[in-house]
Image (spheres, rainbow, N blue to C red):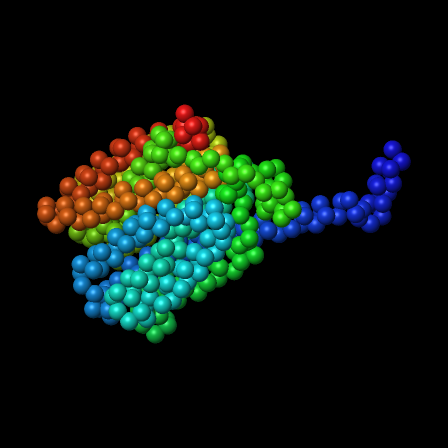
Length: 440
C-alpha cells in the first residue's frame, strides 16, 4: 500500500515514474503514427483514379498530339483493367517481403513518375510505357489498401474503408471535372494538363516515408494484437513471429464468389463510365447535359461510399445491401431502355447508387478474412480475377452497339449481368472467413 501511495503521490506532483514513461511515450507515438496512416490513406486513395480519368478528359487532344490511331486509343482504355489484374496479383508477395506501407509508398512514387513523364515520352510507345508504370503503382496500392485498413484499424474496418472509398470517388470525380479547366488555365497544352496530376501523387509519397519499415501482420499472418490495434507498428525488440502456412485461397467458395462479384460490379462501372453519356446523347440529350448526368452518377459514390461500408460492418450478412444495389441497377437500366431522355436524371441517380457495389466489395474483403495475410491474399485474388472478368464487358457493349445500330441489346446485356452479380454478392456476403473454408 505504501508503494502504491508513493507512486500516486509522485505522479500527481508532475514527475513521471521511469516505469510508466516508456508506455506514455509509446502511446503518444502510436497516436501520431495512426494519424499519419490516416493522412496516407486519404492521399493514396485520391491518386488511384486520376491517371485514368484525366486521360479520358483529354483523349481527343492526346490522340491528335501523338498521332495515335483509333485502335490504339481503344486499346489504351483496356490497359487499366489489364494492369490492375496482372500487377495487383504481385502485391501480397511484395508486401510480405517489404511491408505493405513500403509497397504503397513505392506505388505512389511510381504513379508520380509515370504521370510526369508520359506526356513527354516522345511517342505512343513511350506514352503507353509510362502509363503502365503509373497503373502498376495504382494496382498494388488498390490491393493493399484493405490490408492497411485491416492492420491499423481492425475495429474500424467499415468507417476506414468508407473513408478510403469516399476519397477515391472524390479523386475520380475531381480529375474528370477539373482536368480540362486546369489545362485551359495553364496555357491549353494537353501535356501540362496530364502532367499536373503528378504533383498530387508526389504529395502522397510523403506520409508513407516514415512507415516504410513497418511490416505489420502481413508477414506473420497473425491477427492484430491488442497493443497494435491502436495503430502501433510492432516494436523492434519483439520476437519475430513464425511464418504461418500459406493460405490456399482458391479452395474458398467465398473467395471465388467475391472475385466474381468484384468483376461484375467493375464491368457495370466501366460500362457506365464509358458509355452512359453516349446513350443519353443518342437519345437526344444535349452533350453538356449528358456530361453532367455522368458526373451526377459518379458523385453519388462520394456520400454512399462512406455510408455503405459502415452499414455493412454492422450486419452479419451483407446480402440485403447487395440486392438493394442490384435492384437500383435494374431499375436504372430499365429506364435507359424505355425512356432514356424522359427520366434521365432518375436513371443517373439509380445507376450511381448501383455503382456503390465497389466500396461494398472492398468492405467484404476486409470482413471475409481474419488475418492481415488473409486479407492480402483475398484482396489480390478478388481484384486481379475481378478485373480480368471486367475486361470484355465494355468492348462487348461497343460491338453490340455497332452491330445492332442501337442501345437495346447493350442495355439488355447490362441488365442481364446484374442478376448474377446479385447472386454471387449474396454468397460473398455470408458470415464466414476464407481461412476456415480453405482449411476444410
